[in-house]
Amino acid sequence: MFLRHWLLSLSALFIFSFSSAQNKAAIYVVAHPDDWQLFMGNDAYSDIQDTSNRVIFILTTSGDATANRPKANLRLARSRERGVLNSVRFSADMKTVVDSACQTRHVTINGHDMLCYPYKHVRTYFLRLPDGCFSSGYMGQSLEYLHDGRIDRITALDSSTTYEGWHDLVHTIRAIMEKETAGYSNITLSYQDHDKTINLRDHPDHTFSGLAAAQAGATLPLLQHTGYLDYCIVDKPANIGAEDIAVKAAVFALADFGITEQGDGSSFNRAHLAFLTRTYSRKLPMVDSAGNPNFSNRITIYPNPASGSTVQIRYTLSAPEVIQLTLTDINGNSRWSNVNIPSLTGDNEYTIPLTGIAPGIYFVSLHTAAGTELVKLIRF
Image 1 (cartoon, rainbow, N blue to C red):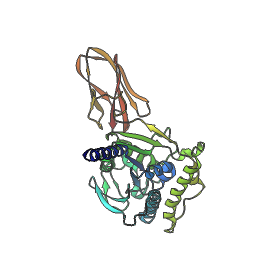
Image 2: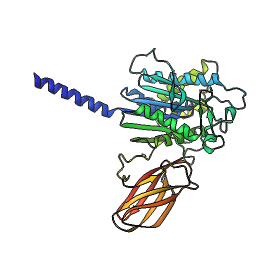
Image 3: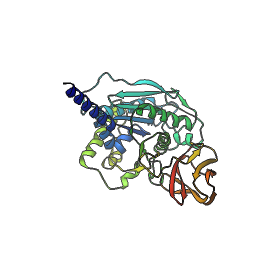
């Protein structure tokens, strides 16, 4: 009898451990309330269908379209939030019964008040920042202007909080990620691709939400980054099947219904429907050594993240050698290189210039006779 109970306990422990190891935390960071539905809706829906997953949506802006208005368009912002909750509930209710007890609540993350909607295994965060309206929105504010330093702070549309600079916003998004992924080892991060040479003609809110997400996730372990294309996909061939099209149409229609049921105009039109037959994304380099043997624990960069004009790299050699250092962006483009650096046995230091290097995620390559090793660099 004892042996039987022991075997059953061992079996249950194995099953629990295996299941826990398979659990995934999937983070989606987007600008506007209909962006994840239009551009990554089929992938997000698929993540939600596995109820062992934790799925996190972080929406940076309200999509309020408050340009040249004396007052913030809070009515439209709230309507669009209702639309997001429609999409989430529809997706989460496919395999489990409706949970009528869930309600939106105010939470404080990194000292900032925001709305959170916990629905089953899905968490949706609304930062309620002003829509940039392709330049600047309410009170001359936008993510682009905050990033570029044209404004030094940005206030939520409902005046609930103010972010004191770009770093404050990035750190807050990172704090949400850390809170929601604690205990998970399989973590993915999806956002709008911030490379303007690839994601052509995109809305600045998309671009800088993607950049903020990439920077926020850069220091977290075990993240696979996926960048999604937005407006430019209308010029590409339809590339998803009928089931995925139906899923995207459903979650977008429900988001749109959140707007129309409040008396605002529908965006369920030809321009938006063209996005539903296409989903284009690319895997971006992981920013941790897990899964990539070329990342090195023997070389370090400081300060990292860096905001000044230089950083120091420290590396160790077993014999004197002339080495090469290269700085590349996440797309593999070389941004700086020095091919002739005399180095000594033991610890070495070298100053890498960052003048003219825009904020983002970069990799420093150390080329020696033994091979190439990489280390990540986050530039603020």
